[in-house]
Structures are given as C-alpha cells and as structure tokens.
Amino acid sequence: MRIATFNVNSIRARKERVLRWLERHRVDVLCLQELKLEDHAFPYKELEALGYHSAVHGQKTYNGVAILSREPIENIALGMGDQVEDPQSRIIAGDTYGMRVISAYFPNGGAMGSDKYQYKLAWIARLRERIRSELERGGDLILAGDYNIAPFEDDVARPHEWEGGVLANEEVRAALKEIEALGLHDLFRPFHRRGGIYSWWDYRGGGFERGNGLRIDHIYGTRGLLEDTIGAIVDREERTGESPSDHAPVIVEIDRR
Image (tube, rainbow, N blue to C red; front, side, top):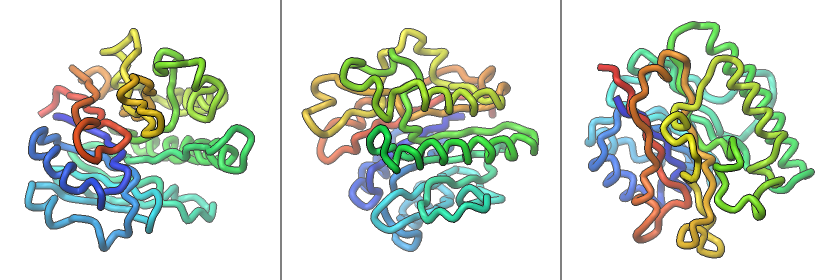
C-alpha cells in the first residue's frame, strides 16, 4: 500500500498535473493541501474516473485539504472539532483502508513574533489535542501533510538562511515533538537518516535549481505503520516541467494488503 502527501498550491492550476501524477503512480491514498478552491469546484468526476473517492474541505482562494483513496472514505470530519472559531480549512480526517487518515496543512507562520506565528503555535497545540482524542479510538493513524516545519537541521539545505525562521526553529520543533510523543512516528526519516532530502523549494530566487530546499512535507503514523513501512521517497520529478507546485509529493510504501 502506498500513501502520499502533496501540497499542490492550487488544484485548479495543477489539476492536469495531479491527474497525470496519479495515472503514473497509482497510490492508494493521497492527502492534498492548499486546494485554494471551494468544495463544489473540486474535480470529483475526473478523480472518480481514475478510481478515487474524495473527501474535501475546501476554502475560496486559500488553504483547503482533501483525502483521496481507492477505497471508500468513512467517518469524515472537517476541522479541529474543538470550540475555537477558526474559518481556515486546514484539516480533514476520514477512515479508509482500516486506518484513520488525517490530511493537514499547518500554518506557515509568516514572520517570527507576528500574529501569524502565534496562530501557528496555537494551531499546533490544538492539533495535538485532536490527535490525542483520535488515538484514544485505537487503531492505526496517519497524519500526512504540509507541516511547515523542518524537524532537523539536516532537513534544511542552507541552515544559515533558514534556521531561526518560522519553518526551522526550536520552538516549532518542540511543538512537533509533543505531537510525536503521543505515539506518532516519522515514516520517512528511517530511510533517509542522513537528511539532505527536501520536499519544498521557494519559487523566489530559483530555489529548486539552486538546491535550496527544506523537508517540510511529512507522513507520520502509529507504531504498527512504522514497523510495516518498507520505503519512502520524495518525487522530485514532479517539481520540474511547466507550472509545478513549489512542493514535491512524498510517498511511503507500507507492506500491507
């Protein structure tokens, strides 16, 4: 079974690329972020023609997340499910392939010390409580998405440019470790322990061409999924060609049938 996450940076702009990517890779589950459109504009029919069920939590212009699966998606939940009023569509959960799957788009944070950065920290704290409640149900859980956090310094190509910023600092890393402490594990890292593998490159300044990337797109899972994961890659090829997203898909392969 193959599970992937991909920040498409507008499904409207990248629809044909995503469809071609799915035709090539035929992953079983794909979590999408930054749809940048409302639910009614999502390409349900085209994806259904490729054999995918879709669960969508869209938003006009910004944010938006989805789960695609070759199996039906049940018990779909939108948002955090807490008492905080938050209009941003950043999280969707559903059951498929006997797992709870969450597609999440963590806030970027803007600039250190800004209101957007404080929102990021508060959002991660809310997510931690959401994950805690999900894990209380028991069973396997996947948290896949654009975390907007590089967990280690070797997940940053040029630390002198990025360390201490909103994507790579000890505060956000500690917040992520608190989520890990609940019982989640990075399914990608065991296959690339030396780091140096990136999933996002800034459009500005030719980040991809200069190799100036960060690993901020992740797939975390519970212990049983970690033990059954047999491979993990970043599909750098999808970052090339005409009008790519600034992110590349991350894929993990799990030995389950």
